[in-house]
Length: 332
Length: 168
Image 1 (cartoon, each protein chain N blue to C red):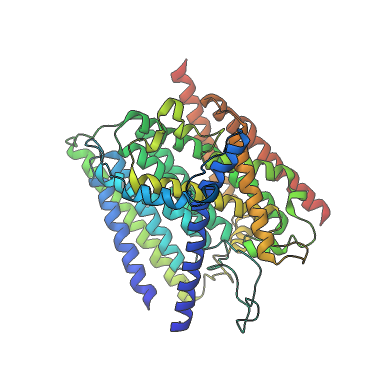
Image 2 (tube, one colour):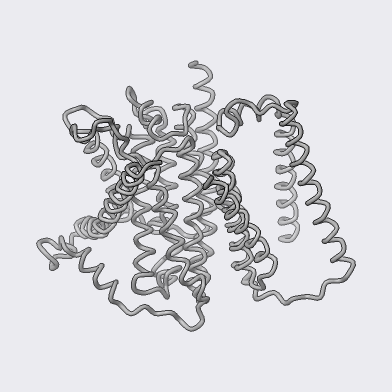
């Protein structure tokens, strides 16, 4: 590998990282604004026009806050947990494509892929990393030696085991139709028809299970404010607290990107707009839907959550795979 | 070249994590060390061009089984385990089983090396890719595959039976 390639890869990583972090910062503002307007409020208004500088102000505030480590905390995991929660999520972006092959308006001689790298098993890699992301919350909840945080961590572990099954199974329908695990090839397979048409049930399961994996209302039991005083991150402050939130918002971006790539045709669209813009529009529609859900539904009770996951979502996703397999066999 | 050094690094870390798994007194630290072992093994699979096995290793062991382990440890809120004096006979059994397992693994490794070098065991084209593994699981190795799933089913039913009995 020569130096030029290495520099090129580092540039790609830095661009993706910067874009993701910027999106994550402004998602907090987007969420607050959308929720505010849905509840007939105005949201943050003072930092810049219409609160446009609020994420920067929040960032500076969190950075200079006192970093509290409680006396009873388990020091090793208390420090490790925030990193464990954000690193796997950022690692998923290594395989997420952001558009078709491009020459950047003729700047480059050969077309490059708009992604850091591609694997033969993109989708399995995404599952593996999202499985690792569990431990940040679980160990974080345990390390504080605080009963609310511990309950939050336990709930997170149980919830993720339950909904990861449905999440995985919902994507297998798409994999079966496309016949590949590579994300760019899955998008190419949707050139005629988006997979949401072939897999409507799969898309609904995917959306539901994603919201559960993201620990957002109506599935936000690990951090239920009204009963667990913020659950797994109750004792965290300053940048460690911010890292949990960055991980959560970065996961929202990951799930929206995956939904776009797998079900909504990725960057494909009428050529009036460049592919990257189509991709962004679809991603932000999904992000908006996820925020919208938070403004709409109340939190589930814990037994309802478990019953819904095991007795409804998982059987339906198995049925979806079964029907998909039969249809594929009949058509071919 | 660099992959050889990486393989030694990952294997060394795997051994260190494995030792830490049995030496830690705090069960959560033990579980975390075991997670480290699994991740390091997955890294070694990647170096062997077996991305599929590596991903499955992480999804199944780290993403599912170890989450359950940690969940149970946290649910029972296990305190630091007291270091119990093990009986000599139990220790002897443990050492014997460990030695037997190591011998078995060494034998399998050595035998397959001989078989591959003499050309009697052919590695199929593109082994490690998802398609090839899938085809082999559902054709040549269908019986072992089905038997393994039956064993898992038996375990599942056993767990349900035991859980139900305790409740009634």
